[in-house]
Length: 233
Image 1 (cartoon, one colour):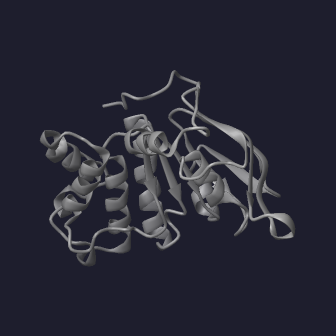
Image 2 (tube, rainbow, N blue to C red):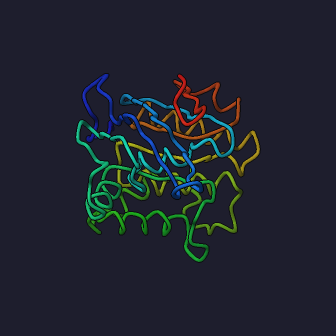
Image 3 (cartoon, rainbow, N blue to C red):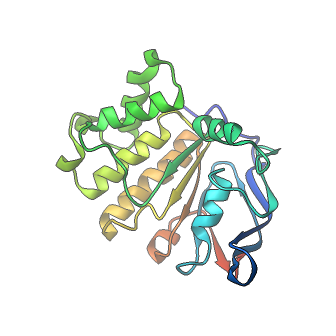
């Protein structure tokens, strides 16, 4: 079933315009981003590459409404979100976005199913739908048969797939993933990328991830590079 929260075909789902982010003040100020522009259409798997410290995570956090730009604007489905209040940013992420990080951040005493169901509770999904949504998400990442296992009983690749299931269970339009394969070997990393591609093509999601791995860049739809705080396509 396609995602119900899609934008129109070819319409940018999320767009960053002139994003500047400065940390600190005066002589100690660090310009992490310097007028970065980025537009991502619906149903795309996009990678953002750059050297360590190039601002990839900073840009991802701004587009995911986890941080605000010093200057510039971010639009999600044509609505400017960079001026949202903290409450509205939390609501936006809760309903429309899924976030995946390098560390799997699973609750160790919870099973795979319970970890995903916990995410549904945070997202405010009706309890009556939890079982259907959690099992479907775990099935999409190929782990329905492992849903009663705890993280310590799983490989790194399986744990990351549980983290993906938790991020997609509430059926968001946009997935933002910060170095999602960094802690995995190449084989497990490509398994995760296969899941991402299926989510884009079968579920209608849009995924933006950061990476420095050439193998990962070779399988995405588009690669953007961050250089000197700006985007180079």
